[in-house]
Amino acid sequence: MGSSLRANAGARAGSQAAIESDVRRLLARELHDRVAQTLTGMLVDLENFKTEEVGWNDVLRQMNGIQDSTRQVLNSLRQLLYELRGEEKIGDQFVDAVGSLASRFEEKTSIATHLSIQPGWPESLTSPASINLYRIIEEALANVRMHSGAQSVRIVLEPASERELSLVVTDDGRGVEVHDARPSGMGTVGMKERALFLGGQLRIESQEGDGTTVRATFPRALVAPLPSQMNTSTSQVLDGFNPKEIPA
Image (tube, rainbow, N blue to C red; front, top):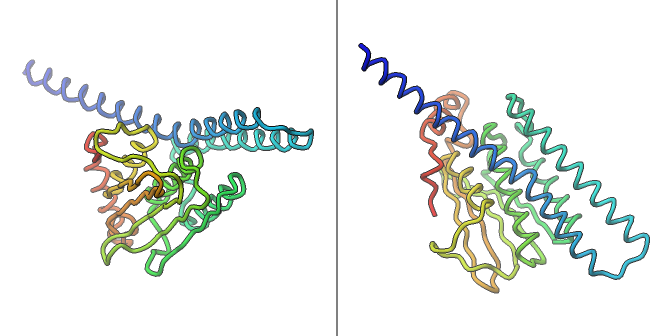
């Protein structure tokens, strides 16, 4: 009897530790994607601004940009707090949200940004798919801004096959060296975690001087299931989710 109680207590403690580990990982990923990358962008902009010859109007324009970025950080923190309480934000407006994200990115960076929605892309996505695909695109664009030196970027949402959907973000920048031995940054790890959460895979294809492509592919049934399949499919993804299994 006593050994059975101890075993049950040990199992509960192990389960609690696993839950706490997943929550910490989730918070780290969300804070990076929504807050840290915006603050990093602000620092990059300020460092660049310090090296320029500017007038008062340029200073005012830069201050307006800092105000906008600060509001973005605050809104991101509020949104994260709302979602931790179970409130949803993007919902079925995924394409519109991505279009707005692309427009803001182009306006802020002067990098030409094109969004292409190919025939066969579903009209609606599950709530987990909407937020996670949006964050993948957001992180990919942040990498373009800070690392690529690109002049243009293209976002494509398309069917990969009858059973799969693809999200592709391609830039014409300097490219990076990609191989298994190269350590992944937190942003890359976060994108791969989000893809895995949706039952998919994310790959980064790049060569020096030839731009970079972020390509994520997902089973259609897990991203945009039929209403009768939604609860079962989503629970299957959650049950099988293990961030430690992220592919390199």
